[in-house]
Length: 528
Image (cartoon, rainbow, N blue to C red):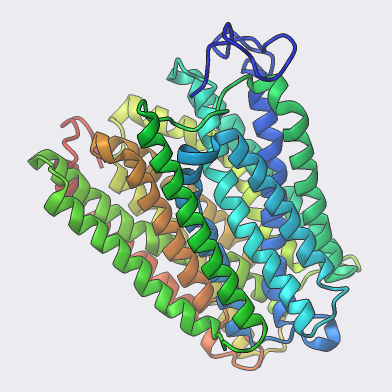
């Protein structure tokens, strides 16, 4: 737990100003600048790497890649992204019980940096077994590091504002702007290096970005954050605290040993792994975990009638969020492959890297986020606040429009026998509508979890929300390999299925707005 600045300060020198009076960073605490730039560089590295993965793994050996079948490469990206979300759950637990938020972030940054450089250096090991070991070891390190860093850095942002209120909301808005700035520039820089210079130069650039973030955090954390997040949550009984720490260490050793064993068996060829099969089983496990958790809460959670109704609403929102993310998270797989193989990327003799299209979403978020913030406030003032399911339904609808554009683009490619490269504006338009959908759904989902969850289950329900993202990311990876010059017909089928899933989900949820609103016990003045 954090201490008041008047108490002993671990950072040395004069303590930083108290967060409630510190306005050195655009009216916000100086600590926000440290977290802003650390997170910006972490997102630079994460989003800079992600779109390169499927292109690299699916590229032929002669082109410097691994020559994986597209379905396998896309499934690996889906599993990787899914595990990144899942790792946030044990990452928060380890920080709370053992490391404290600050040490968890530092170790997370170290692991992420090591992971990126392991991937970058895999090029020196060649395209055989040694190169693949370095590559997949790097992905594993990034998953573990992101699990430690991502949830805990957001928690410290909240701790900077003990007074809460609008200043805290504004602080998070600035923080999220750093996320999108990192994502935007990361994909531009790693994309052009990876595609036009060499894959491993792109991977290395992502590693350099994370190294900068690690240095920023290491140098500035003590001077700007004081003692916030230095210690884990401690039980008042030392004996109980000791048992809790022992349990965490035992779980970490056991899980770590299992991961190392599986990695060694797979690297030596003793265990043959099929990414698509593993991804399919993972989908059932993740969905089953969510269903089991909700069932446990309903049966044994000691909820009253109103709480059960609101948890039922969370179940509904979970389902529709997973549908949304399964479409949205095709960006690094199917849409990325479409950009490379079927999009006219020549502009005045310059070939736009396919991965640059991944930055379009971040660009639109930066431009549109303030617009949507003002829109919700204006609508609430004039007509009453839109309900959460109404915003979710709108998000699904707009994402459906985005993929409907891809049906038209894919059909043009198929009609030409694969000889036509379509205008890049098809992808830009698709990303625009998907971003509108994201802004309708994603921030609303986070807010809804805190508003609807029974107080004693708020933290767990936030984990369930990220589980929906994990499920969607996994599904997006499993279907994302269906963009292939060797099998053109499956491409419009993929986009048609995705579009219909989104639009049908939007219609079903729209029909449920009134009953869901009643279960949420919203005020009668609220409108759909």
